[in-house]
Image (cartoon, rainbow, N blue to C red; front, side, top):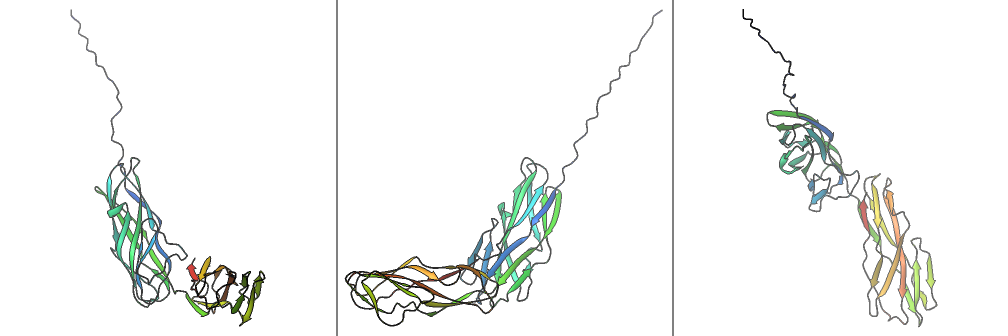
Length: 299
């Protein structure tokens, strides 16, 4: 008798399953903000780059004011090393405010061209600036877009988030020169000397070779006007050469009677500028003149 044996070998192997699909997401970090920019009656065009730099085209828009500008920032996550494209909806919105709308005419992105590639970890940072066209005679105030949609596409996947674009139009500061810096008529002796004219009109002579012959020395006077609460810096020259019939006279140590940094009060600000004049020995008689600049910078 023959016996037949059949062996059935069973083995349990783990099932091979595909990894879950990697989704596409986009997160808004901050919106697009052109900052607070003084704009003159002529209006102008201004560009906010993707690295937060403001570039004005023409002289109607002044840069360097606070609050500072910032490009919009987003974080995109999805399949590693996949390309993506970005679109803003609506494509080129208008910013609404107290005056005529400010129109956005171009998007400026990093990576450039509104497209990029996710890195090996499946992540990318996307930054978005824009070009804004400001019309003539703008009304000061805050201008904002409607809620905008940033749409990111990678392959068959799409993700969206929302953000805003905004622009603060500020009235420009106006600096007016009222009076010139005048040291009067001086007599220079063999030794020469200095005359210090303070902003409060106090005069001090240095050395023994210089005397006041005629006139009352007076500082230069300026008026600064604009929106109350505007932060500003005053920049004075360091030296100036006054030219006349003889060797030039050096004017140095410019001083003002107001802090160089401040906040414009209601009604504006009037301030004086003085300095120290050096007169050489036996200076040739005659009129000596020069021009200097006082510059107001927005904070």
